[in-house]
Length: 153
Image (cartoon, rainbow, N blue to C red; front, side, top):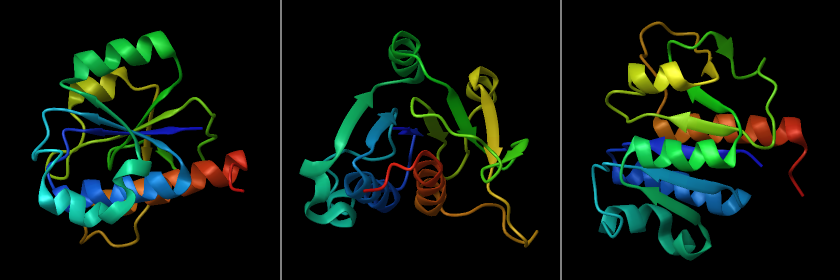
């Protein structure tokens, strides 16, 4: 099943909400530092409530540590960015995909975008909104990938 990767997330409630989504869907959550908060942050725990024990959580201190593990494991790096070239609805997901999301303030760095196998965007009608909330973007992408792969029980 695709895995969620948050690269340098900054806002604890977003990560907590994403952790809850990952727990509910039994999806691995990979956090790549540096983080803008401590994992023990009370806001993070509050957003995830009592779901943290059910999260398949992995932490890497930096992109290099994550990239090394991912290269050994395999699978495609699918970067979600407002500068994407394919809609998330038109993309054909695979079970070993890594769905990458950048920080709330900066998105994914150009270096990380260059390493991605694909750059995906979530269409929005309004040009007055720069992007969706990180936790909303993750949920939209994850549920579409699960729908395509028929991994709901």
